[in-house]
Length: 318
Image (cartoon, rainbow, N blue to C red; front, top):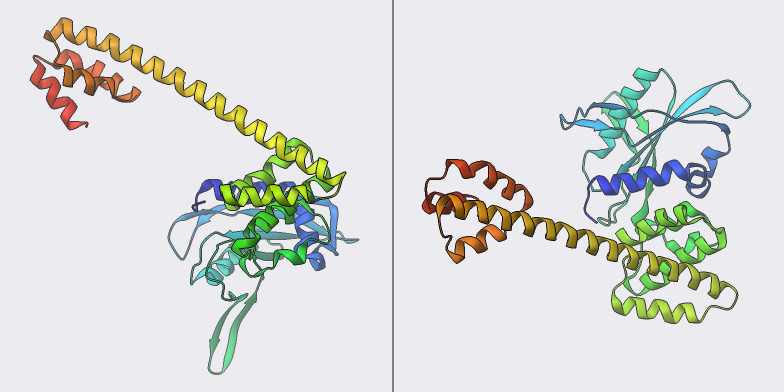
């Protein structure tokens, strides 16, 4: 899946819904001193990226209270979907802006979710001189492509089930990882809506080929009952929903095509009345126009004095 808003949306939605589960799996030392009843997701923070000059929206900003104390702090989680040489500096700049605007301590976490490179990425940013260190800033890093998915199978966790799809996976292990994700969902007995979120990660980052699906099915058959029945039920439900969604998309596309054909036919009649017989190649060009261009042609029709002007209009928008 390319780096785009869908990628960002998936990670933000996962962290919002499974925030405590995410900390439990990957940052238990932080979870240990948070009051879980104090969690507040703050409105999106937008500010200018000092390194790139672009406006940036903080991925996730959470206000929490220290356990047993009336003192609050912020947890800032930033997802890096592609490798960038200056990302550590950018994490510091965001830290400074957030600390300045909220006047609260900030606990920064970077999730590195890209596939490569696999080298360890920095977890600090420093400004040093020969005689002193002016700044030594550290932050937590979760580099998914360096994590072994097998190490996270002991305790079922919905955040793990989703993020396993971005961990270090050998090509021959892909069907096995997909199966383990479904087994976690079955064990946790997640409702369909929460299942869909994890399935979205699987579709985006762990979509199996036909050959891999055959391996997956053989592995499912090897599971003992009653777990196999639960896994099969989830798999079948997903297949039914995918088929239904495909049929709905097909019906909608058919309706749109029917409407467009009707508008094209009506427009051809209007053009024939105004300009006379329309050559077959020109009719074919008009029939292939998009809905938007059909509307534009209808608006421009009154300006045409002959077929050649119509040809020129179509040629410009081919």
